[in-house]
Image (tube, rainbow, N blue to C red):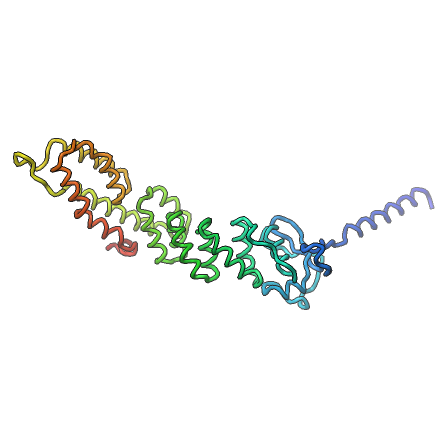
Length: 319
């Protein structure tokens, strides 16, 4: 055999050997570390591409979300999960007979992600403690806690989280409640949007399906509230001044300034009170005009309060 032939044979053998070595399917060691001496027989790959060695038997015993070990045909392929590596690592650590990770050390966002994953895969040794920990974090992230509690049926947490979320992010919560068809939470959130700008509410609603009708109802209600304010300001109770005058000369600059402010402000009682305080100096301490202003605040705006409390459904129906 020639030297060239011998070289070709050797190269071919080396290539086959390398190819064989490359083809070996490597399974990483257990995420639990030295405390676990079980062999890993399956690979879970997180959404960010990290590979984790796991035990198919543990997946069966500690969760309801993975198939039984004896029903799995092992192949040289990773099992891809939609969760990121931080979450997958925690899931695997909870699926061992050993002390569990301290969830108090987790950032709030990671805690929520892990809790949802534990519920999804039925890892019951984690779901209970997650519920407790998330209940303690409700003030830090009420909207996310509401979503978690609603998804998994934890009504006691959901009620507290929902009320806090409405206060902190009313437009966002309003839009979400509409998107899931929950009119009770939607109308509670809508009450908190009255002091927001039209643009803020529009930006929130346009992100959810079927938003034009509900935005139209919200906008119509807003215009009814604005009209109630203008009617009260244009037709206040009169208080006779000296000489039989209905208003003194200072009333008209005051009213003009006030109407200008309310034309661009949110049509709410709170906005009106602030606007009146800002314009009050134009009355130059006229007691008679001051009484007229008080009358507006105490009686004429009763209609505004009635409109503000009406459910949006009444405006959707054109009532």
